[in-house]
Image (cartoon, rainbow, N blue to C red; front, side, top):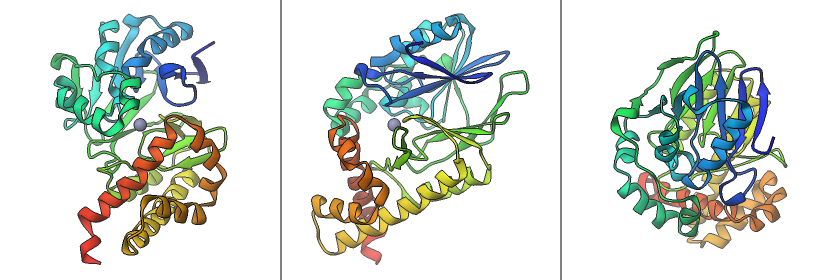
Length: 306
Ligand SMILES: [Zn+2]
């Protein structure tokens, strides 16, 4: 097994390895009477996802659903290309995300502006035919048979149209980017808060996820994790800490480097993975976007009022 890993008797994950980078983006496959894939990943890794499906023993025609947490390139950029290989699959996406996949030109332009070289590495966001899309909103239930269901949860914050998917049997949540990035080798969560990140909405979304009392989290970056409620609550504490730190830095007119140093002084877990992040081609960029996302948030919503 090069790409896929069995997580339980109906659930698999696929390390889609865009540009050969392991432990970065995980897609998930639920196999009951019907088959659902969660996250297409970017265009650059569609072939790897298909190879993973083959390893699991699922034929392309068997796939009924491709669900995406949000339409960022690393989660849904490859959806259009993947669907061309999956003749019977429908794309499940939030209604606000859907138009950006039908006509992805603007999304791709913004992606290139925001992500630079990383965007090129992920590959161009592919368009999806309108008739292949089913829009889903809060509490939509996707019944996969054999008592396995996915419940759609609207969890805005990282993106305004972000979804999470709650699975009722193993009580796991596919969190997209709502619960941060799980650095599985270190058992550490780092924020993912690029602009237009919304702190208040994210905190509300996280408390909704806590209310579901999940046993597992299935991160899109990267892999499954136990201690689900504990991790969600810790992420709330971490986001508040980052928020306070960035806010204080802004009041003191500090630059990015100084604000980031303040964060490392306070966030012990991030300090432990700092060298790893420094050396990682994607995560070191995400960290910059994270701090910038908080700065933009405070500028937009509250800075002048405080
Ligand atoms: Zn992401």
